[in-house]
Amino acid sequence: NASLWCKFIRTTDNCQMDEGLINYLDVAFCTFKPKLLPLISVIYGLWLIFLFIGLGTTAEGFFCPSLEYIAHNLRLTTHGLTVVAFGNGSPDIFSAIAAFTNSNPTASGVAVGALLGFLGLYFVYVTIVIVGRYIHQKQRSKLRKILGDPSNDSKPGVPSINGTADENSPLIDAIQSTLHTFLHGIQPINRDEWTNSRHVFKLLLILQAPWNVVCKLTIPIIILSAPLRGWNRPLNSISLLVAPIFCLFATKGEVETCGSILLNGTFPLWALMLLIGTVMSSISWLQSKNDSPPRYHGIFAYVGFIVAVVWTYTVANEIVNLLQTFGAILNVSNVIMGLTFLAWGNSIGDVVADVALARQGFPRMSLSACFGGPLFNLLIGIGLPCTITIIKTGKPVQVRWVVWCTVLCAGLLVSLCLSFIVIPLRKFQMTPAYGCVLVAVYCVFLIISLLTGLNVI
Image (cartoon, rainbow, N blue to C red):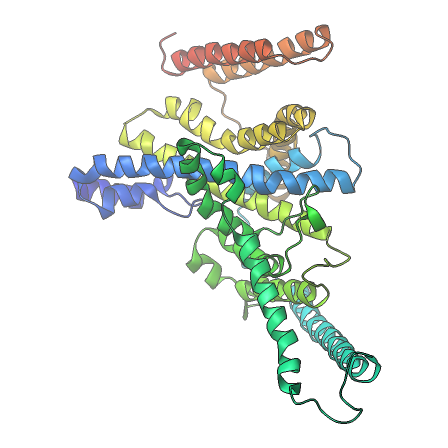
């Protein structure tokens, strides 16, 4: 009975996809009739492919360039045990802390009110100083043109006949230049790449285009190899304006939830994010030119890195929820779901980011991130939430141990020990053959885990 399925989904906690933007189970079983379930499955499959493309686009086009600049700026070696590990693991850390501690997002305090007051005063101060400086420079430039330009044929004190047109033309030129710069930067498909691509890759470029547009509008990016390091004044200013509010809604998942969060009981959290974005965007716009980035342009890479992590986290959550929905539609057991769909979905963000890093010429960073990311998640992701919970409750955290957990630990131990022995013997030269060996080890471990979890062995 469709109504019973719908009631079960809406009243069961495990069916609530709190970390996603869409409840795919609710849409599949409550919004449409049961006879349309095959069609919904096909649509979900196409949407899943589109999400995978978006994940790859975000990692390769935005996450990696920001990371490359940060490594260059901080003079880091090409290992991934620091920034990449934190970027890949930080969303899981924050989610784990929230799950363990059950923190209240509406709790604020007097400090938040003080912060709002400071931001407001600072915004007014910066606006007055920068606008005043801009007006002063503009007036001085006009006086220099009138009094000191030898090519000016008009007599001193006598206005030119075309004075109005002369005054308006620089403004029109500036607007046209800014618009051209914005349209060139927001262009989702590179013309040369489109011309030299085959039909299959052209289809991929078309599917990547929406992701490129939304990411460019939300992620300020720095490209080391590009002229002016990829500076685009209008596009970067828009991304700084949108980034804070996007991060808020992406991490909270629901517009209603974000709108109900009040700081100090009166000020909405989304308004604070909008205020922060407005301040950053205004400063960036007023202290730069179309052909000259601000002195603090390097900070954009750090902001872009954070927003790219949020994008990866958001898209990966949607993929996990979709895979979970497919498991429910196909009536897959929890053991198989945990070892296959959910495990792959939870790891897909790291896989795409690491592969993108390797393709862009950072294989050592990518390889070490494969070990540094899980290490970070295990030690910090489990240790920090458990420590906070123990301090708050005064009781130890109970861990339920089942038989196939032993198989999981054994498979992980075999893989690590094999790498610990083989990699030094090969003088730390990784080859495709050893990659195939690791894939084979994973397949064997997965089969044994499934058989153990299903009580076959």
